[in-house]
Image 1 (cartoon, rainbow, N blue to C red):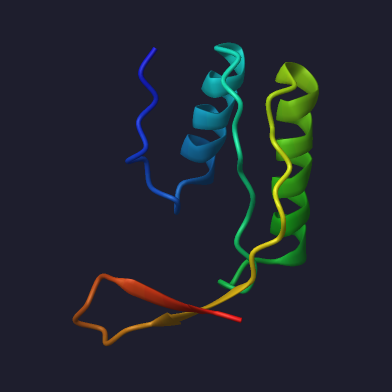
Image 2: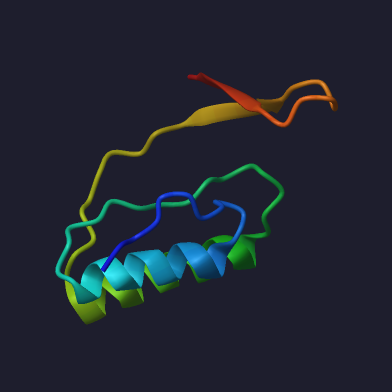
Length: 86
């Protein structure tokens, strides 16, 4: 099975499908969530519960340290996003 790394990070369902497909194939996977990009508290919790459920089903989610970054959008004419680690 080919798992595409090109699926948009802005599509939560596509991300969860990719993580689930990796689990079904017993591929260890590191995942997480971005905080501070306009999401609600409920969306944060939904994401964490979804990751928990995928790990419970497949046992493939790897734990990694928290990475904190501040994202700042560039000029409107640019599609790129830059970030500065803190």
